[in-house]
Length: 324
View 1 (cartoon, rainbow, N blue to C red):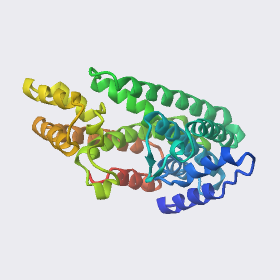
View 2 (cartoon, rainbow, N blue to C red):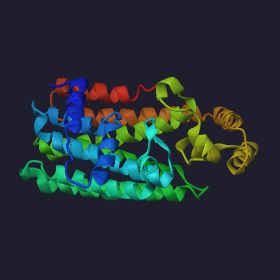
View 3 (cartoon, helix red, strand yellow):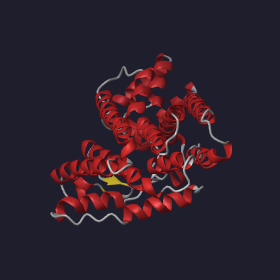
View 4 (cartoon, rainbow, N blue to C red):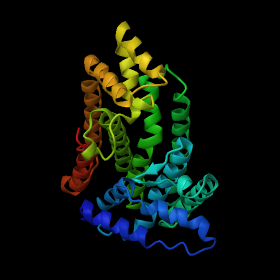
């Protein structure tokens, strides 16, 4: 079996070897640029790890794994455009480096390329794989729509938020796991358990992002702390703070949410102090732990020798050690 570093090396080499030689260069250059920005490659790694539980050689599904990564980066490219973000992983976003029309068209091309790569899988599993991929793509669009709608709502509930992040983030991790299992010829029960593992892990991972945006170490987390607070993002933290605050705390929170002019550090410190007083830090950490425990149980239910799940177990644990 391969370890995580070996699988990552395979993914990076495969992506680096992609050659989009078709004209026009202006269409494909942003695609290459986007994929070269890097990232953790979590989704293709999860697919390869799920496959590797059953099959020793993973090279045959590198195209499918890269399809997932290409699709993921397509969603990020369009997210950046919708959010008017200037930077992605420390580099200019496509719409800033080129322009908005290029971002739309190159993003659409990435979507097509992702489908083209996914259809190169073993024909025996093609329909099942594409059914999973198609349903996942629809769900991610639904999650993004909910996220956009939440921007103008102040009554978003915890249940609504958790459903949004399930759709926007978790289902792609889950689909990566299930497609890997299907391509390896795993039983339907194992494939379902691996999907559930990815779903629970994805929820824990996204909630951890909420947590680290407030309580993380910038040097470890990789970005500035307090960004969600400054843009009034409806996170698990804010939603629960609004629901659990007393009258005075809620008034103070609303004052900061409605403020148009403020000192950024003062706002971050004030909102964080309210979170501390209410116990939001502990609440969020407990929720993260509950999802990770549920994920671990789903993995335990997969009917293969425990030693073959060790790489996946260790990788999942590493995702939860981002300075929580």
